[in-house]
Image (cartoon, rainbow, N blue to C red):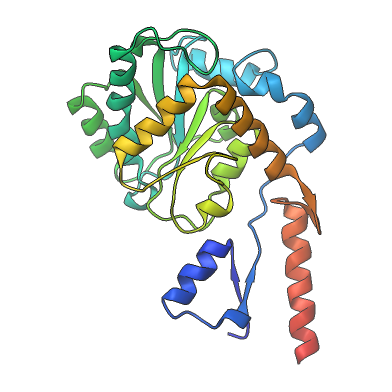
Length: 272
């Protein structure tokens, strides 16, 4: 190949580390992720963040899953395959619940006081590991708190039903669902792997956790639950970062992805 395209700097650097191509062959072009009007998202930020007015889709999802309206929902969207690390999300669930069981007076990031009985975990997606993950949840005693919603075509409504989003991947070129969660101003916890740090800047647009580490994952989630200021700041920063208008369009827009590919093709044609 004359040219190679990576979704993120992290993906490019990992590819180079393993001997794929030369630095001058690589171009970074983010995958385009559909979004409604950025202005509308900005105006609706406060409503979108913590399950208030304007979140009818999320409320309907909660009702369909028998999740109380005022509960805290921590969610993940992924194929249920090993690389997505959902097992560690499931294993983190009892650790989060135990943290609130030990400190029942802890205040959540929504300003309400929560106990472990107010917290649910939502897994959206399907795959070969689903039976194993359900079994792990049962054996850990959180079968009633971890909800497996299966494959869905209403991902934005599912995301809107969540208060916090977790991406527990063991490897991830970029993470389109991370971007979707950022569009909805969700406070995000994600793993420090491959391309994710190009989206999640630790302490700024989310919190980063080492992969395959349910203790660290749970600690980051509990930190957001207990710190309203941090969660609000991270959610707003994630929204601002993901919708920022730069050369070619919004940072993760389809328009910018096409623009950058056109520029790359023009460059290749001129060389030839």
